[in-house]
Image 1 (cartoon, rainbow, N blue to C red):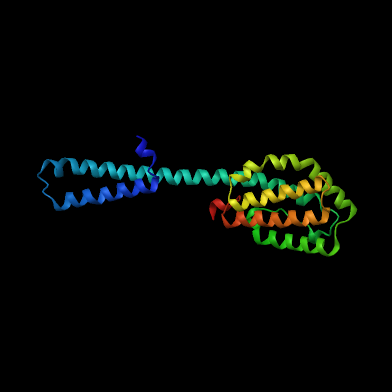
Image 2 (cartoon, rainbow, N blue to C red; image 1 turned 180 degrees about the vertical axis):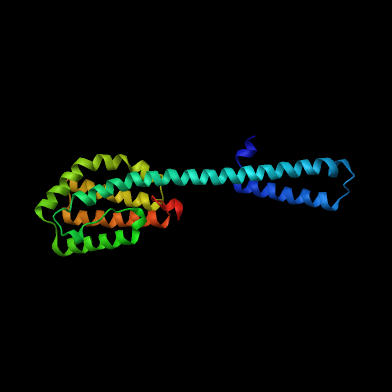
Length: 209
């Protein structure tokens, strides 16, 4: 059965579909009194049809389950981003603070992140915010590192964004770069992460889109 493992699902479906039409044609245009046409052709046609239905239903079921799993993984990562955004900018004016940051609110998320980025670029961060972000990064850096395998199960853009977030979190934790600069880089990659989720419909609520 080694040959079977080398045929992917789409190719196997195409072969079955071709056989189905071939045997339907034989059944309609050949002598139905012969043993092959009258007995074997209906059996083979029925088997092909049953296999196609099983494969297509199984494929759809797999696709739905895979998407549910990926959405669950995305939500796990997003919760850490929400925690970072909600707890490190408490001294900023309310209109500059990022809200719930749900994946379904992509346009709103990007607008809020852009406003936050603009403010930091123009005004920097207060000492209280710098201390809060440093403490957060020191505390969470190892956890974010450990979540890299989770990010790798999503799309390439998710993984790249998460890698960069981890890198700049570690820069802050190790005091190897200015906190304001690394915070800007983290927020830019949070934007990238959110955009990847929206584009690939991998967020809570996307099941019904």
